[in-house]
Amino acid sequence: MRALVLLMVCVACRDAGPFDRTRMDAIVDAVRPRVTEPHKRYDFKLAPSLDATTLGPAPAMLGRGDGRGLVRAEMDDAHHLSVSIETSDQGHAGEAGFMYTDPGFAHADLEDVQHDSQHETRIDDRWLRWTYDLD
Image (cartoon, rainbow, N blue to C red; front, side, top):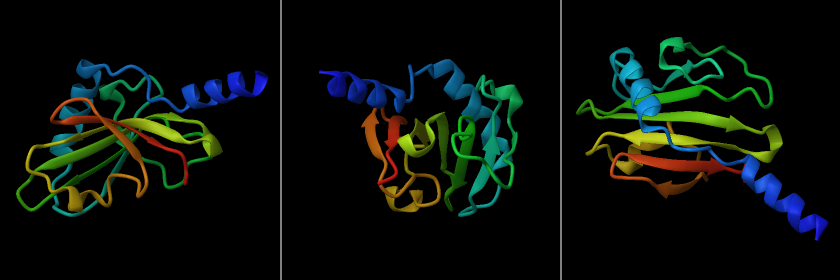
């Protein structure tokens, strides 16, 4: 029984948290004018509060578990934008967040924005919730 409770707690820790559309849309709005070159990955960092006004350049190195607020973005040739926002980083236990994609952004072009084996749950036509359990 204890093992089951511990497992449930660990799984809950990796959750991206509640989806706050207003906050997430504000982050995408802050990122959009900073992504200017197609097929280039842009890395940004937000304060732990995930306030869009705190968006700045990502540090060159992050410590284990310091990924909350990490934002990865890329634009395709047609200027469609994709943005991944990390909302939880539990170190070796995994990471989680939300990903926004403009309609028309080809899934094959998401290589620099999403983790290779992230698990996704669709929220709507532009947003999805992702978890990455380091597998």
